[in-house]
Amino acid sequence: GQQVMQIPQYQHVQEGEDFTTYCNSSTTLSNIQWYKQRPGGHPVFLIQLVKSGEVKKQKRLTFQFGEAKKNSSLHITATQTTDVGTYFCAGSSQGGSEKLVFGKGTKLTVNP
Amino acid sequence: NAGVTQTPKFQVLKTGQSMTLQCAQDMNHEYMSWYRQDPGMGLRLIHYSVGAGITDQGEVPNGYNVSRSTTEDFPLRLLSAAPSQTSVYFCASSYSVGQGVLPLHFGNGTRLTVT
Image 1 (tube, chains in turn blue, cyan):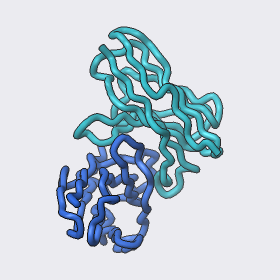
Image 2: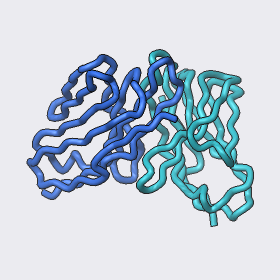
Image 3: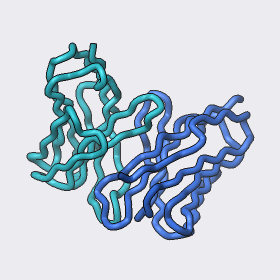
Image 4: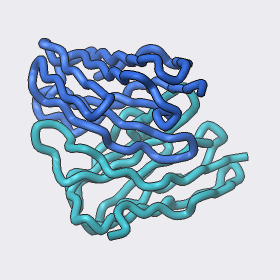
């Protein structure tokens, strides 16, 4: 079945450093979504990418969708303590899949 | 708008007991799903539904049943709880399935412990 792999599993940075998490799917995706989960909370939707090669920005966050629609990345510039949490990618296989499969997430901690 | 409401927030069961985790949404979403979250395992899909009367299995369906008699409600039933079902359970919903599943709205979760 479809698998979504995400690396790294953990990342610890100093405040002000950049952070990147990478996501790879075993199948071609119709879209990829990114979620953030704060400690003790529930996942919250950040963004969806649909087009091959798409790049979207939200303030200090940059999201990319690969040309083959099988990989994606999230880059945070100049991390802040408010960025702490676990970031998940999730994708649906191309062809109208009704399942959204999540990666295992990258847990980000930020040292002030 | 309450969004996605899950009850209870916490539950402790003994092995072999049964229970139902409740999930309700007031956003008129067609698509509803259940995930479990375990340390280091991310979110794994248990069951999902694309509309009232329609349910299907996800990645880890064994030991769980669901039904979707109304658009609003999607309960998850554990027939005979096992310690391996100790987890945090999230219910999530979205408007529909078009080109893949649309962005999900998650409930606050139910933390279940089976002893």
